[in-house]
Image 1 (cartoon, rainbow, N blue to C red):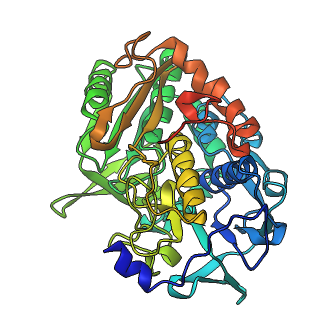
Image 2 (spheres, one colour):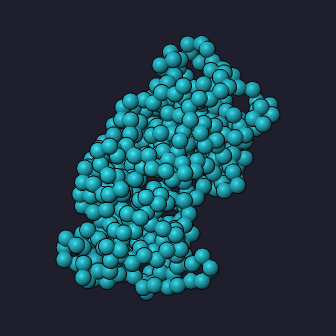
Length: 438
């Protein structure tokens, strides 16, 4: 089937010379977030190791952002553990040297012609394409949310943006009595554990500041359980019950009446329920970017349609994807990218070298370091099939929050991210050891 599809795609050029001319190969990476920069840096290193280079104009990275954000840090910002200014750096300081950064947005893809059209009308031809454009946050998917977030008296916040992450902490700290509701949608989201992390940290704060009897915490989620992996879900649900946090499952937030501090939720049967709140932390619905969803690259759900093992597109053999934009059936986290990027780069280089059998395979590894309180973290690690794949199980019971793991999230990971991961030198559980494939 792949051979038939490939026949309809412009022939791929292999390379064997020490230096690649612009007519020989051209790599375009769409997205300069965690996935895009990590993959681009690792690709540069892989080519250099093979004594091959791309001319600067032949290695293009497209992203309109002025800043790059360490988004896992926003849970720390919302928890008072990190200054938000430390979660961003100028994009120009992180784009790999030897590449060309185009600060524009993509309008459309024409993979049959190996062509991308930008919002400014420019068209870019490519020979190899890596789509790492991330996930789209649909702020307008909840009526009244956008207005509530800019209202200092609304009590509504979200750690899902740089602009509002510190508002979450301000609202949580200011609350002396009343009801604090934390929400999670049923859609795929960036790090499925993040909505809980800020909730657990709020609970811990109220315990330490004698507000446990005056503040009531509730968790309203569109999901049927606390977490997708049964092992960790059971632990988290037991923790919720032990800490007297009410849980409402199968409830999606659909509207906010900020003036009256009321939130409306829709249940699976279509009925709605309205609840009063004092503060409301919102995880907005998320999904594939509109320009991906409407493109030939997308599957039925709107994600870039790639093979779950090789990360190669199922129809266009010179297209790869990783991270939140991809159809990979695993949790969308930065940790997942540490395992995906080496696979993608190995297979892409093989394709560029004219190989047909791709040996590198991704097993779905991802991780969610769940803060459960000050000095405590549940390190959830798993792969396809929601099967745990734990790095420290020989030393710790990863089915319980551990104090040792807390410093991975608050200290090690932020350092590794900016100093090594984006430079292509960090491989998650493997640290600085690059995985090998055969």
